[in-house]
Length: 234
Image 1 (cartoon, rainbow, N blue to C red):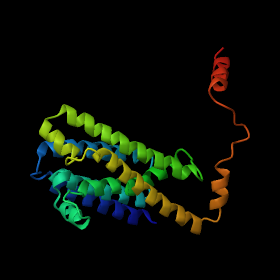
Image 2: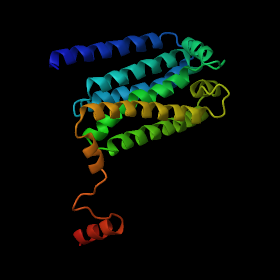
Image 3: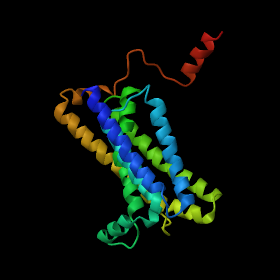
Image 4: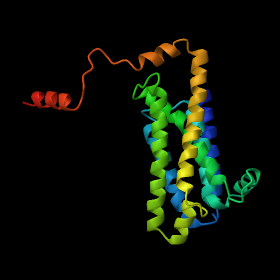
């Protein structure tokens, strides 16, 4: 793909997010909740622009990240428990609960596991089985970590803003269900990626098998590694 086409796509993705963000910033339903939700936005956008010079994601990864961030800022505008589309989704699923937050947690797994896999494969050089297991575990960890962040943030801010930020809607198992959806979403994407590799990568099974073999110069860590470090410093 030419640099010109990539630049156009990057511009479209950036403008799409900016339009959504500006819209979401205009008279949000709960300003304090909007501010809390956008901490994630500011951090992620900052990381993308800061690291972009050193690590360029694929257009597919950037597209997935942009879609998720647009969905997130929509939730920040209404608060996740009040998004109109969530009510409709809840009706389709036969519940009175606003299901927008459930949808976004599911799509977090669906959309973010691919960029994480791309980083895992390209930076950590994970191969075969580990190219799927490592990103799955990272997304699972992020899902759990975010629930902890929500709990901490909700406990230190104004109670009303904290309740809006949590968006549990009275469900005592809200955090566990959100984590489960993110895990299921990531598994779905990884399954599709694996099917694509099985179909188009002739070396898939060989790479999968080889990923379980140790290098010839491999040694145990723990006390063996500690002993070598001590000897090297004497």
